[in-house]
Image (cartoon, rainbow, N blue to C red):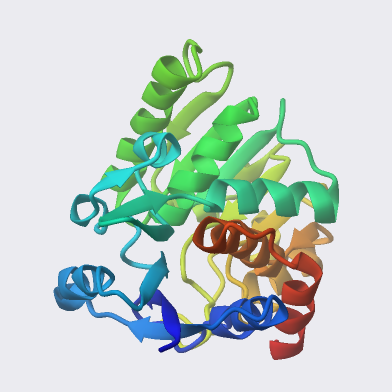
Length: 291
């Protein structure tokens, strides 16, 4: 019987993870199938519990379950405990163990594709969900000068900002964000160019513009508010050229789509499940073909 790995999320019709993960599994001739497990919130616990079956190796976790899945696991690694979000589950013996490879994937794409170092940079993060938690932790780790977070629910942005300050103080042995000034601001201010003055990096962590989402075809920002000298990093990867990236290009800004991060975090997950170094070039080629 072939073993199984699944992607747990809702909705996930847009996902290409099965394509490039299966290419990696086949490359190493592993008898494992990577599947889409579309999971409405009410079914999350039963799907996670099913991971304990003999044939299951683990899973990826995506929107909207990266935070909700935490109490359903037996244990998590130190990074997950600090970030507060899981994107990878590995069955280790009888335990389900949570990991976060989004932090690695986010930074790896910045470095490999754009040679961008967040240290000393002024950053805006759009969204305060599971992906934004990983992004925020990565930016604080790399000592960005400032990090301003917003979300459609302002309380979520405030909570994440406080969480990141606490993370820096308790885990990174830092004071006041370990050099990073972390703040939250209301979503309504994304309509103002002043919000983005002197910002070096804008990271979009919501599903706005994602294929098959309720906000497909939309952008969180207009060209008028985007600085021409900023890098706009949209974690949405399908479509590859998102409405936000098109707006950023109109503004003259540099852009980075979500596909490299998706593959790099997936490669880190692959190694956790299999103990084998992932064939990143095989995965990137397959992902690009799919889009």
